Length: 189
Image 1: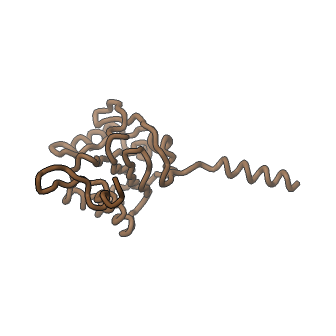
Image 2: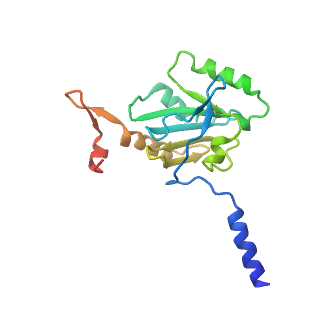
């Protein structure tokens, strides 16, 4: 009887879905642009990525955080940021309508917003239950998760993201040459 209990517990532990964790390496995936054309996830392995994986049913989650970046956009040749709309978790909204709204939202801006119609990102990167959640991910150039949050960000988590931006952001010297910021130099990078 005791052996059966141990076997059942062992099987249950391995049957539980594995969830994305800091330090986990991610793989390339196919997503879609606002015109529903497939493409490989942009800049993965080339730049540090700040990715927003958004459930359109809950647009107000992390609104203050998003508005901050709208008012204070950062551009850096070492970092890229974009959104991916989780279309699968918005069954009451037609995908074509959501893609139209994406095109309208980004028209005239330099923003990039893609879509995931079938949980490709969720499954490939083991994000767990992201329904009704605004997910924020930081993926470094080595394709490793350095930040992951599904849901409302705390002040401390917002500071973590700002610290990651500063850590990897390049700055110009007085001579105009690019150099790593002081934090990266101290780390020997």
